[in-house]
Image (cartoon, rainbow, N blue to C red; front, side, top):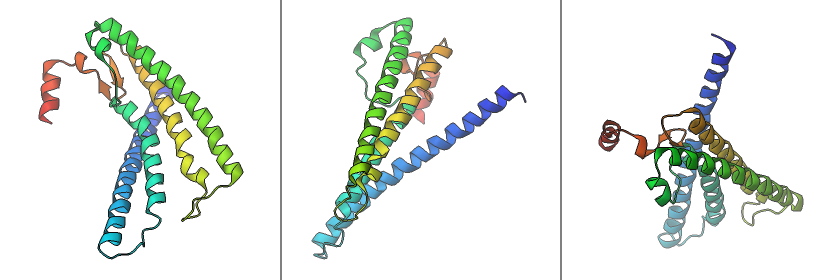
Length: 193
């Protein structure tokens, strides 16, 4: 095996590990939000207890994680919200150019937001603010914001690259071929899955 093949295989392994980590983090965050909210309602309404006083902080923490870590995941899967009226009616070449431009411009925006949210995290760390109930430093909660933007920027660059590299299809995400480029058999297989 040559060095380039080894490097590609290593990157594929890292990519799959990152995807599994993203899936775990997103799943765990949503489950945690559910447990905190339902647990608080049960404790308050059935037992008349306010034992889940920390539920709001934990829920906010999980929402921040799910929101910002989810940006890269939906970019990878091509599941982000899109306004596609012009895109859907464009011919193949037009869709290809639009997708490359959209992904590249979005990557730049994500890196810009990552930088500025990183500065925000630094300011939170400097001021030393902590949450009221759990006494957790606020910067710990908001550090997922620049991380999510950074990972999303990387993913959008990957989406740009795959659209430049693969000439015969348009990719909405690394794992998602544009539905306009799928043949009838592929569409039928997806419906039956």
